[in-house]
Image (cartoon, rainbow over all chains, first blue to last red; front, side, top):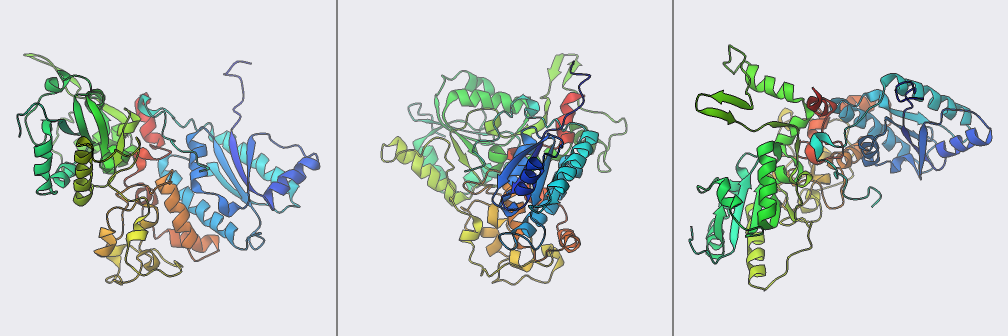
Length: 156
Length: 334
């Protein structure tokens, strides 16, 4: 297929928490559920570990969308950290919008370890939503010289 | 100004900046005499008459110390940045504009078209024929040129290699004096330069660390603009009072001047040591202290932040991970 006839396949970075949403993804896998392969999962210990830097780095590095997932409210392994993720998510959307990143490119999903089906469904739905939005095409070389804005590793 | 050619050469240049950095250098008071005693001021357009061709005529590396302030707004800025990089042994990104874009970098939220329209058609501009600046013009005397705007503003280190970073809008004068002292000591062989790439003339912690205000557990139910409230409690942490203070992510070095004077930190010293993206760090900090677990209520509290993107990237947009808005990026592709 040529470039033009290929359907747009969004690249989505997904952050999961160790205790619920990663296990939901695992459950979807061991239950042999089929769902869109567009999300690249990164496991964090907790959604509260999600530094907004990770999200901005994902967008700046070429991701079309970012999925944040964690335990249901009240179920966090670390008591209240998923609420921090919720607040960061809501605030990040307010910062991304004026940057021209559609708020639909950032999604928050709560999924318990038993909810593999829900996780798979949410991923499928998100991929379709992002497909409609089209590629983000964040310009990494604005003006020809912004080659190295990322000097340190985020994981430092 | 010394005419003694044997002294090491000093240069200071401004690109897209306001001139405040120059004022800050002059605010070092008598320390400026040490600059004159130890350096020959070879190039400093604000302070003395010198031409670009004088710099072009110099040997590579002939300038010992160059303090470069301002961002890269147009091709002239970039040309001089490359020229001074070549001619200077030590190139310092001096002040917030050169380090991270600063206020001129806020233009990266808008397209070039919006910027030019704002400058040439708004109410305060008398421009009945809707004239726009042209980068070249055939005058009777011959073709003349003015610099071309870049689609987005870049920081100095996005164009050339930078040896040291000196943050601040402007850098505090005592910090400048200390750096001048250090360089003079290095010239005399009494001290060593810090490793290349270091941030100089600043602390390695946060403004909060230098701030004398009392801090307790922060639980914010409402964000308020400082002008909308009765005088803030002079003793208590401003963020705890709901005033969006950028101290938690901002590099120390200013002795928390603004919070001490009753105003919130706006972040002019840039990201603290180890902070990759200044705005992201502030988002994490602010979101952590909002006292609500309900999405609707959180949104209501966040409504109190009038311009979150501007609040978090007032000084750092050009130096941030996202660098410029989609609108600004697209303005290069007309």
